[in-house]
Image 1: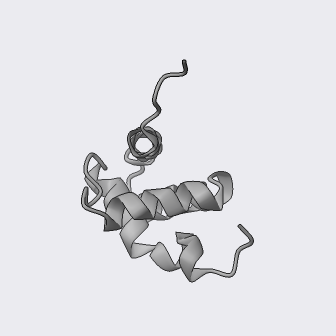
Image 2: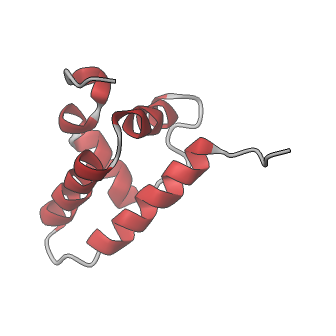
Length: 88
């Protein structure tokens, strides 16, 4: 029997760790861009879709650090696979 994996909690944890790294940047816009660029470059479209489902769903992005939430919301056009023509 395999343990149940909470995908949303895992993605939130990973995104927040990325946010912790970029939070040290002296300029907020640079930090926000860094988070977005990292997610765009290293996260598969299905991971980003699941993150946006967590933001748009009943949980309303519960657990996301404020800096990460701001990055993914303000750069949604670059990150959300539903808004981009990316292969699945």
